[in-house]
Length: 83
Image (tube, rainbow, N blue to C red; front, top):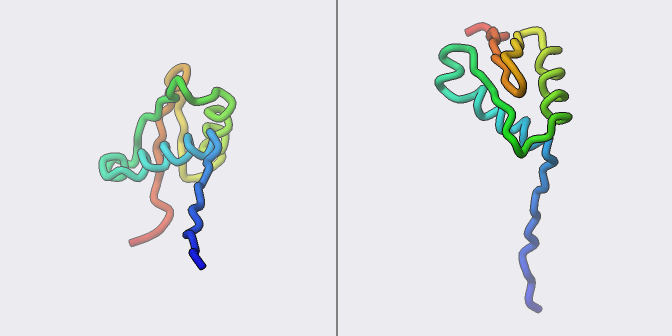
């Protein structure tokens, strides 16, 4: 009997892709060193997804969101854990 390995393709929603991109940017060494970064909505990203992400980030106690223009926001954060 021939057995074929099962390949699972993980399908991410557009929102999950946006969230993942911003997550990678926030976790970059440069952003972590400064505890801030500027995120920019890409033309392929839906405005509804962008607004949802900004709303969720703004609800976080440790994150300050400053809107800099259409599709541009500065994120600043504090560390929530002690060394």
